[in-house]
Amino acid sequence: MGAAAPALAAGGIFAPSVAQTLRGGIDVMPGRFTNTRESLKTYIVPDWFADAKFGIWSHWGPQSAVGEGDWYARRMYIEGEPQYEYHVKRFGPQSRVGYKDLIPLFTADRWDPEHLMDLYAKAGAKYFFSMGVHHDNFDMWNSKYQSRWNAVAAGPRKDIVGLWATAARKRGLRFGVSEHLSNSFDWFAPAHLADTKGPYAGIPYDGSDPRFSDLYHDYRAQPAGFATTAREMGRVAPDSWKLTYFWRIKDLIDQHQPDLLYTDGGIPFDEYGLGTVAEIYNAAGVNMRATRPKASISASRDWTARLAFASWTGSAVYRARFRRCLGRRIPASVIGIIKEVRPTRRRRR
Image (cartoon, rainbow, N blue to C red):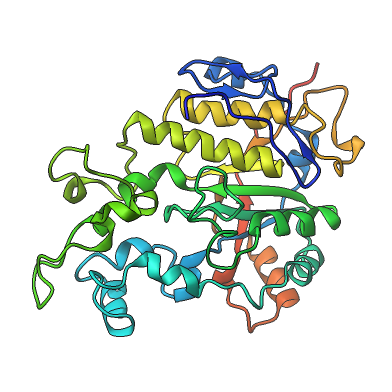
């Protein structure tokens, strides 16, 4: 993965074949921004972002198919957790049936992004977020660097991010993606353990199987006991994982050209995480998406994407409006309502 990433051409997207090599030896799209904080601080918040006060986030992936929480893939391996007990009763012991075996349950067979986006637009949303990848290491697009565990290769066998993007842009909504990948290396640690009591005590869970290290990560080069000490939202990881993180998020950006990128927990891994920000900022200055309206790019300022930091709850007014449009049969937990942190003041030239 140390070589320059090739140009991508998919769904009307074009990426220039020449890349600039930055600090850490990573390659990003040529442009004004580099993977340093000094460079990234010079961007200017676009007018549309300062004015769009309400957006909707689909926090949706394979864990949703089980229906026991968005951290199911971790907690199902922790003795004493409700998800652990639920898993044993419904599926059997974790040493026999692991998270990988549940991914086929995520079929999205009744998912209708066009209908849902009509509802979101009616609710007043100005932008929409799709899950790009959660801590479970499953990419929701046709991922180039996670070829076995992505939504086109497994589960629904659909480019979930791409279909969400098409539906949103068709209705004039800005499109964002969220990524929670940087924590995955530590977050999945319990999958490398085993029961400490009962009939399956000492039998390793499937996370320890090298055949599935592309999902659960490879701990063989880590210090002894790493799986027992890793913190759930830790970012203790080898440089090889940090580079993988960069290429995966770069691929997400280059394929789907989001207007916003949400990173869970702040910008990770120094130059690698800063490189993903440089990628999205530089991509915003290139006409990579044929469907982007020319009016979206302001000649008087640098039109850039922004890392959007979101919370799970919006104002009471927006929650009520959203529920009226969707109807009471759909629980609020299905879609997160984003409340934007006050953006940086726009700079004037």
